Amino acid sequence: MITRKDIEKRECDLLAPYAMRSKDTKGRKHSEEEPKYRSVYQRDRDRIIHSTAFRKLEYKTQVFVNHEGDYYRTRLTHTMEVSQIARSIARTMSLNEDLVEAIALSHDIGHPPFGHAGEESLGVLMKDNGGFDHNLQGLKVVEELEQRYPDFSGLNLTWETREGINKHTTMFDRAKQLKEFDPGSSPTVETQMVDAADEIAYENHDIDDGLTSNLIEEKDLLELKLWKDAAKFVKKGKADMPDKIRKYQIIRRLIDTQIEDLLTASEKNIKARDIKSVEDARKYKKRLVMFSEDMQEKRKELRMFLMDNLYKNFRVIRMSDKARRFITELFRVYLEKPEQLPPSDQKRINKTGRHRVICDYIAGMTDRYALDEYKKLFDPYERV
Image (cartoon, rainbow, N blue to C red; front, side, top):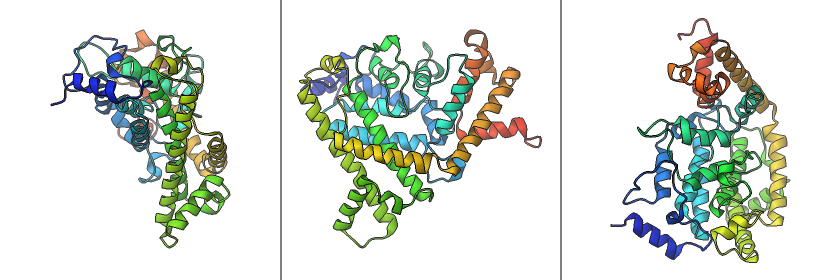
């Protein structure tokens, strides 16, 4: 039978010298006796999975609003895909797979409904009251809003997992780094690995969703170096296959190619900077986990294509604009008459302020709940 001490010893024996070991954690805000058969990061992972906020990700969207189709990615399916990619990379690089998984599973837990349109709307509505950022909201969820334990609010996660949420950085994610997490230092290599996995997941799977929705066409993708090379590789393996399977195989190849490049370039980078400890990684001011320059250029071309042809597509713009109206109107109604909020949220107003309580309430909604709430408040024939 393997105990927590055995897990910690195994980490010391097998992990890379710059990987975070669970025995070296800075701990939790609230003192607790740790489990006998799980590491501290395994406990973090389990608490995240069992949280209400994690379950709500099933009905929070990426690009497509929930009711547009059952086959599009949601925040939950995206999170699972990020976790799978990140764990695979972490295992290959001998990083702490449990910490990587905890950070990956929690990286989007603060997202509001309706994807980036929802976040932008709350940012505008809260601009004079502290603003809104989903990374900081994610921290608030795991530190305060989840109510599951008798002795403290939140999930009482380790310092390293919470740091990973705060320092999560991609093209879409760049939150204010809090003083508690030493903003002058770089995040753990595990956090950096999750960031890279997040980018790989959402870009390639947005292509998949874009093709499924017919908002983008393969003939246009063939202009991109990454897609062209992947398509050529798949055709060489087996030229005759149904279109649906062929496209899946191309996307699979895209992901594999980027992961291989990331592994090679990151290992080269770590060796060149002589990174031999967690402290060395934190002191190095730039990212250690990164793609090669050639891959960065190819991925930049891919991102620009998605921006111009998917994210700015008129149907996506319509969905986003409609979502902004939903959130703006809900916010206005609650602000004018906060008595319409649930009693548990009304109790927080004196301490937290009306704007922030409303913001937290809306951010915690799923797409489906927000739409139902809108109908209850504005449709005269809808039961409240």
